[in-house]
Structures are given as C-alpha cells and as structure tokens.
Length: 372
Ligand code: ADP
Ligand code: MG
Image (cartoon, helix red, strand yellow):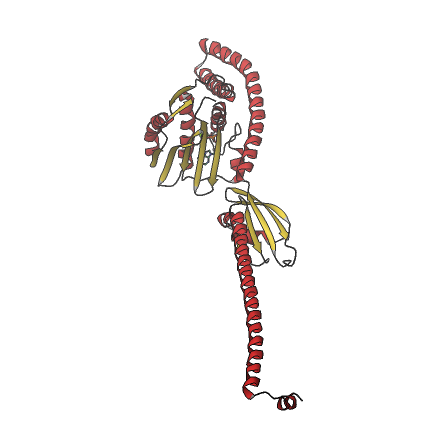
C-alpha cells in the first residue's frame, strides 16, 4: 500500500532515500538520547549502590569495633562451633569456656577458672538468626575477691573478738596460778615435786604467751607508723632469715622493684615477714626449695609477695588459714597468719593468697603507701 503510493508520487529515488535517512536519524537520535538518560540513571544507581556498600562496610566495622571494645566477652555460636568471639572473649579463652557452658542447657551461670571468676548468660538470636545464640561472658574476679575479703574480714573480726574475750578471762586465773606455782617452788619441795611444778610452770607460761599474742595482735592499736623504705626492712629480714633457710637447703631470693617511701610499723612488718618466710620454709620438703620475695608498687599500694615452691594448700585449707588456732602442723599453734592478718589490716591493707597443691603458694600483702 505504501509502496504503491510512493510509486504513484512524482518523487525521485534520492528524495525517498533522503526522507528515509531523515526518519532513521530522528529515530536514532531519540534512541541515543534515551540511551544517555538510561546511562545516567545506571551511573546514579551504581553510585548509590557503592555508597550503600560503603555504608554497610562502615556499619560492619562500627559493630566490630564496638564489640571489640566491650569489657565483656561476646561469643556467637551455632551451639557447636564458635562463629565469632570478640577480643575480650578471646582473652578469656572462649572455646575452653564454651565446652563447659554447653552441657546442661542452662541460660546463665557462674564459672571458675584457676583463680578467675566469670558470670555468663546466653540468649537465642532472633529475626531469622534463630539457629545461632549469643553468649555474654563477664570477668567478675575482682568483685568476687572483694566479696570474699569482706566476708573474711567479718568472720575474722568476730573470731578475733571472741578469742580476745576468752583470752582476757583466762589471763587473771592464769596470773594467780603462776604466782602460787612460784611460791610453791620457793618452798621446800622434794626433787620430783619440784620437777613436776616446773613442768606446770612451763605450761602456764606457754599459755600466757599465746594469750598475750592474741591480746596484742587482735587489735594492734599501738601501731608505730612511720615513713620508711619498705624494701629495706624486707631486705634486712630476708638477710636475717637466710641462714636458717640455707641450712635446710632453701634459697631465699629478693627482687625489690619498689624502693620508694611507705608508711608502716617496721617492727611489726618484720614480724609479719618472718611469719610468712618461716611458714614458707616449713612448707618446703623438696630438695630445690626456693622462696622469692618481691617488693613492687601497684597504684596507691606497696605490694610484698612471698612465693614458695612448697606443698601448696587445698581450697579447704586456704579458707581457714587466717582463723585463730587453725594449723595443719603437729607442733603448730595456728596464730601466725591470724596475727599477720590483723597487723596488715591495722595498716589499712589486705592479704591475698594463691596456692596450688603440689606446686606452691604465693601470699601478697597490699599496704597503702600513704598513712592509712
Ligand atoms: P602454724 O604455722 O602454726 O601452723 P599459721 O597461722 O602460721 O600457723 O599457718 C596456718 C596454716 O596455714 C599452716 O598450718 C599451714 O597449713 C598453712 N600455711 C601457711 N603458710 C603456708 C605455705 N607457705 N605453704 C603451705 N601452707 C601454708
Ligand atoms: Mg606459722
């Protein structure tokens, strides 16, 4: 139909071709324009996608940083494997903990690992991540230690008060006993009688000494605090104890990192150190006995640590060592650590103990550097 019309028309072939070309170029122009618009749109879209990708990466990094700077451990698991563990969790040894968390199916609990205490809580993820769970692990060692210290303080205070009251009651009749015994001994006694009376007097004097110890150290009110160099007192005591240690084949070693001033009672501090060192000596039965004494500084406190490679203590023994009259030794009295504890407490300080049966014990004394 169209061809017939063209043939009928008086137009030349060139005219037709020209028209066709014009038509074609108009069409291609519009296609090119349309294409340019499309291209622009694609470019815009691409930019948007790139921007979104960057935002997504930033959000990922943000979340990752956030999780890593948390003071608590965060672990994501599919109940079998650890899928993610933040820095704190890695430091706490999340995989080791996880195997212990997985039995029982509980939602929260507490764990002990060596000397550390941890509290944990687990929660299933939501919104499409139901197969995973997140476990939050918190190191509460310091809090637990503080709690233990306060409990121990209360218990020992009560025990100390009772011991002091009993000691006080015993002191008077004991004085009379000693007096009458001396009178008996001054009189005319047969040799055997004299011998027996002397035994009794010896016993009475021992009881008197113990009672004086309790009364003096339960509340050492008369602290002679003065500014001095703690490491010097430690060095003097170590030198003094060295001889008796060496005769038993035990090496005493001192590392004094802190040489600065500190407020303490030098005589009582010597007594404290002698108690710890003799306990350490008594705890060592192996041939290569070593006792290391460190003097350090930790924030506002001077810290003396006495570490031995002796028998160590069970947890049960550790719970009781500061109680008056607690001893595991045949000839022990069980007052040494009770006295030490009271002296350090009177200085405004505290004592911590770490011990493992078979490998040794470490006592740390924390003493405020400034006047308590
Ligand atoms: P005592 O020395 O008279 O037994 P202490 O109060 O000095 O009394 O010590 C109490 C108990 O603490 C000891 O009997 C011992 O069981 C334990 N003990 C103290 N120091 C150590 C140590 N360094 N190593 C192992 N056990 C220790
Ligand atoms: Mg002792």
